[in-house]
Image (cartoon, rainbow, N blue to C red; front, side):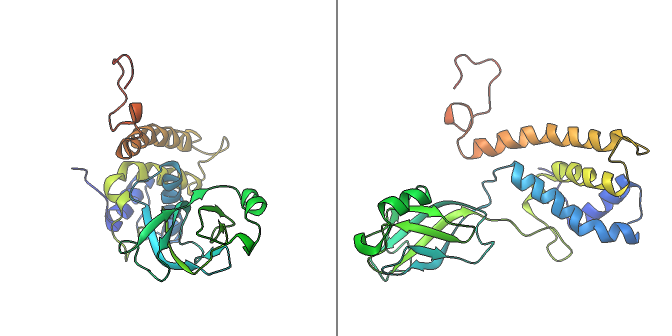
Length: 237
């Protein structure tokens, strides 16, 4: 099994590789943003299966077409289910009616008013926390929203994360790219101009393997299976 990183081990390893004391004031100051940089890069580069979630407790009111959730709750929306019958808040006790994603322009053109109110069958994101549905809801319906979320960062109070435990190599490499800027080794005029380039190259190498593994988890591997790409099998799966 992978030897993961706790917050304490992460600090020690980065300080060792950067050749600074863990208590160095400048190092301590950049540590939170170093973690943010590394985690955000990895989360954006890899479509993690573990970040998939569903949220309930929200609704679309009768004769309206908008669903509002708190900002930052969902990073990427993937599916909206209208729960029937009206009044049922638990999706497992009611019926999920999946909405098809479309454009806002389609909703405006086809379902632009409440005159055609009914059970919503389509949705479109309006912004990061407001979704529009069509047709306008004829009753108040609870909804289930499926999408991805941004996991809590590694910190002194959150000492282990999925990334630190299962992708410690990738996290270290991404962090060392950030450290290169801290140590002024980010450009041609630096003492070690190859430092950032070397860590970035190693990050990209590790990323390719991690991306294949995440794709396999979702049956998005070769031939839409969970198999690894085969260098010899013909035809491909």
